[in-house]
Image 1 (cartoon, rainbow, N blue to C red):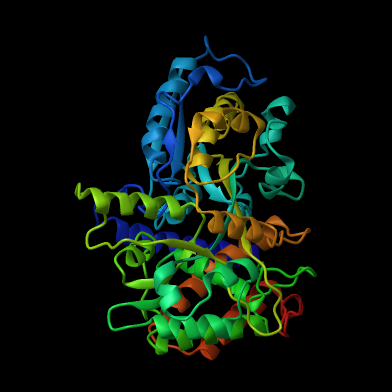
Image 2 (cartoon, rainbow, N blue to C red; image 1 turned 30 degrees about the vertical axis):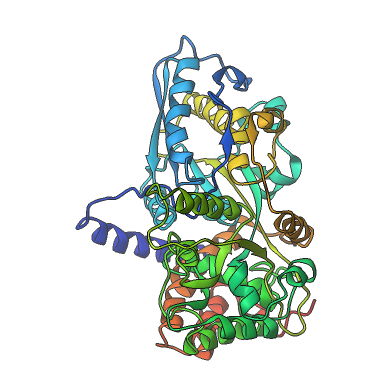
Length: 492
């Protein structure tokens, strides 16, 4: 099983490498949909607040370069990483952070390519669902072997648990967030939606379908979800909540995407695309909220509470006429919304933990890993954590981050959106216990190598929901064994 999955991953890397050779590498600027405007205290990055670690003091040690690969976690994250690198070097003059910036669309592919080639960065941003992939590749590192217990104790255990597989901790959390859908509140109201009721009580899929039907016009889609390249996984994972798919595995540890719930989800998405309520092509992550801001989409996803800040900032730019607003944008009142639920499904919300993991490459030594742990802890704690979490409208998941949070202020939050977000947090379903690194890796590879590419064909009308579902079942049965796949309806 493992050899087959690795072969699929290697095939993907070879294709990527061949195509990448013919194109100039473009590190995208921060995704304009990825973070709000947060008011920061002047000079907020305080190097003196950096954590200490039980690793050997490196102030007189040999020079060392620590490589870091990160996407635009917030709209200012990549710029701040350059500042953090300077601060870290001031603290440890013999240590240099070398930052590789990626876009959300190419981050996973670039990370996989380097990891398989034995050239993984020392530190990389990874969602908890992908950790198993790197463990199976043999590049994951148990950070508890190299980081002191008192530094690990700074991080909330529930967040650390997401960075842990089979009792081994592979990285440090940056944030816990909820991901759902957002909308133009005025358009929703015009489409007949009681926005306050939906935010307070949720809604059915039939109510959602009626809304996006009413909200679709010649120049506006009722619903847009980022769905190109790697973001296809976001569409299926986040909107899959509507069909009762809260995780790729059931509580009985059976693979869930072979269930009737998955067929119901694919059928719904296909019907929306065929009806013209949603695009019949892949939408880039950087475009889904822009389409809402320009009046070309009523509801968009994935969306998070933080997008209220993006839209508020853009509204201010429109009013100021200073040339910084999204081109062609209109004034929008943002509404954070729950995912609708289909028949027989209990309402829930998709929750995610993203963090930084330590990875092994061909040049890794124990001495180097001691330095990597200093950098890993520095980037995930204190002022760095507070800056990131405040910009994402989230609470910090480490004590040192919470202590530094007072330097960051987000004012004038919409009360209804705050309440809706709090309600959604209470609905998050944690992953089932017992998922192994191999299971996680296999599920991740199935998504990237089979499901995501087939999903583009589904949106374009080049295959039916049933055909895509049959392909998923066939491949999953080969990987997990039919007896380990759910084929009935996952009741809740």
